[in-house]
Image (cartoon, rainbow, N blue to C red):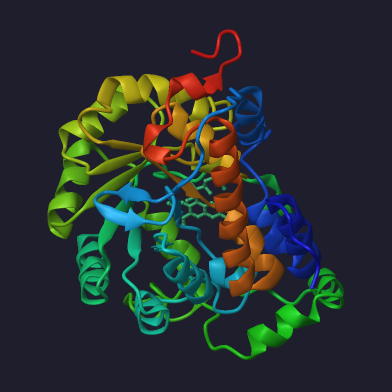
Length: 383
Ligand code: FNR
């Protein structure tokens, strides 16, 4: 077992052990990848303020997100095709999250279905829905999520149309993969992935294939999704979806103060300041750059969370210091899953929590709730 001390270690193993097509799918951004890169480099530009001779006993990273207790302010973000990074990936990630005490969000575009995850993870999880222009599908999938005990709905609002990732086109990304010669050559060194995949029946989009009329196999799926993403989305439709759910709602993919104000006015319990991990609008500012103005505008009306670019506990600390009440991570846990399956996700969470705890102590703080602007030094022009 290699010694894993940071998320970068997990990323290296993820690359080594997972088919290139799926590693690239996770580790890329849209177009020139400027926003994808700046999501992480902007975090690095923020510095932490060291304090000494402060009592640092009795520290805790525990807090609440939308009133739910969490071991640290980090939820697992919805990630499509997680079950292609590793067989039964969504079940493995959900289990690791439940044991650790942080929320897991299941993507609409997952390989394991809502029912699969509910049956095998044994904990309430959150369900993410895209804004599709098919009320029958929406109603059906939300009823399934309710029946499975999902305790919150994440509505992703920044993907009415798909940003292009060059690598996915070049790799001919499909799920499951087509076994072309380059794919077979790649798999020659990644046999453990193949063996585990052979051992599961969960290789298709579990929330869709078999649940939607006319989509009985993956070949009909791309036509279905291309038709269903709603180019006419507006705030009335988002509100309708929220009412259809009737429970806690998190609106994910807000990057603008005016949109944040709309999200707060329709009654979102939380919003996620996010650029979809740099996978949608290339050229948009990083989430961490947009966070302070959004917190200032709506922080008293709704919980403001952040995702995109978090790779360490120090990043979580910086987001909390700039006003976030919680964060989500995508690639950081996917790296863990691709590297080592369920123990890899657990390891990613342990790494982040330890980094958060130690850095908090060295900043002279005991509780994540006490973090604030005083804990960071911002580069010129950041605000
Ligand atoms: C995503 N993301 C995403 N978001 C969503 O709402 N539904 C989805 O199905 C997906 N799928 C998806 C696949 C992959 C491979 C990635 C990397 C991301 C976006 C995700 O929820 C989150 O916003 C970002 O991952 C956050 O950025 P970091 O933490 O990966 O930098």
